[in-house]
Length: 387
Image 1 (cartoon, rainbow, N blue to C red):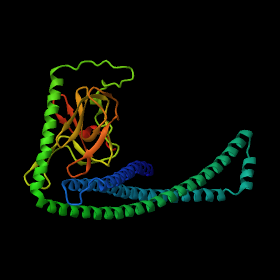
Image 2 (tube, one colour):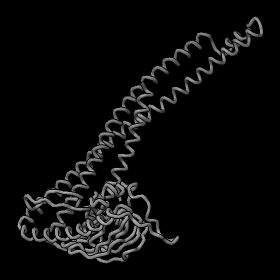
Image 3 (cartoon, rainbow, N blue to C red):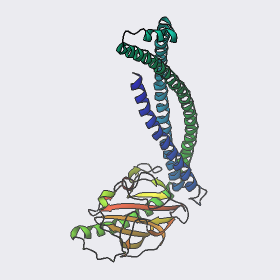
Image 4 (cartoon, helix red, strand yellow):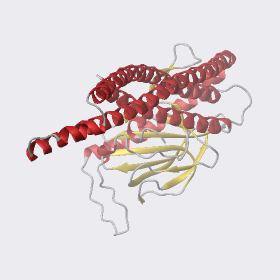
């Protein structure tokens, strides 16, 4: 039973270490997020950008709270198992002490060292002499081992008692941290509500901004569909490259969940796909990729090796770079400047240019992934889990 409890305890400790690391990473992401969001907008009045920032911050806090809750659950489980270990070890220690007491009593009954020596010397022959000597030695060895086992069990018991105290303290600290983060979440959600109420008075302005954004995305979509149609209609021509030129034939399909991010630091403020507009009732908005809020002068980089197939300007999306990776394309838009040209063979993490500003004055990059069938893919499923 004790062995089972200890093995289970080790298993939970292993998961506890992972939970601690997840909390550390969640806190680091929130710290980076706060630093980036603090410097992203130049406008002091309420804007859609600021609302997106708050929503991203809320999402980050909710993730942190999930990790804290996991740590609380693990601490409770560890505390229970440690308590069971204490009980089992206490029982074992009591049994060992009772057993040792019986050995001491038996030794007392047979007399001391003199009587044991006399017992050996009274042997009828040499063979009996050896057997009696071995018996006495074996008996002494058992007592020594019993003492060592008692000491080892006592040390383990003390360790588990300390472990119980630590888990109680860990749970209390986690509960306090959870309380603080919930209070912070409540403040952000209240601010979010106030922001939405304020933006309700700007519906006409928001509608115009949304229409401009849709026009830009529609134009980009037309260009991408035209490009992917060409790829689908004819096989790709092999490209002859010099020795130093990067390889573009690497299989992109094997990179799902492994691609590097297009920026060193950033916060995803608008995710891929369809969602209700936070202000305009009955309006659905679609994001063809992800919007990443960044700091001023942030460098935008290629996520994988490939060939630049287009460098263009699109209304409301500024400079756009398209890179082909076999049967896939990556698209980088809202760039203020571009360092590459059509036909360039690029390695992964090659600087393409710098991030530009969105309509609210916040530095932002939009990143998209397309396949040759003209289908838009969720970038977050392709990028590594954490920047």
